[in-house]
Length: 200
Image 1 (spheres, rainbow, N blue to C red):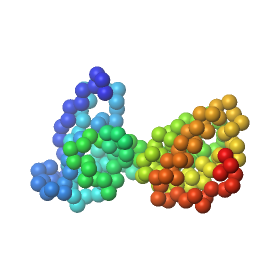
Image 2 (image 1 turned 90 degrees about the vertical axis):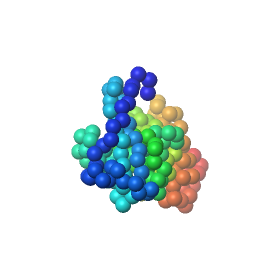
Image 3 (image 1 turned 120 degrees about the vertical axis):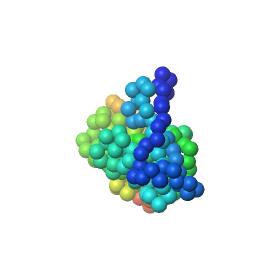
């Protein structure tokens, strides 16, 4: 973040009383502006009331930064391992800095669509994207729920990427993502592996 100064000011929520809430279950956190190339961009200090879902905070942040569809976005912790914020981890938000990102659903859906399509170099880009995100259990679960594991296994089993000039990178990304998904996703099962996949 060299050369980029972030000012933080309070984001106005529905009521002034909400901003001044003393409920210990309410959380306040900072949001990094999604436009990273702008110097002196103002960050946002957000208060999430204990009786509001996490999606409420996403809606407010999207409104502030003029993003039209909040369902396409989610919050990520800025500190490593930079996992997505979930309802089960929302209490960890207090005093933290987060960023606005495309949601696990959107990311998984886009990756699966590319992997199901024609085999070309764009697969490498999406497999790299999957490998980067699959270490997050939330992404791993959502990817599996979108039938992503079956699509990924089929890609490997049928040698769709091993006969191309760029297959080494693609294959490495695929194996890295596959390992993370199998280890971290509660939805994944080794029963899905065929003998062909094991042989690979």
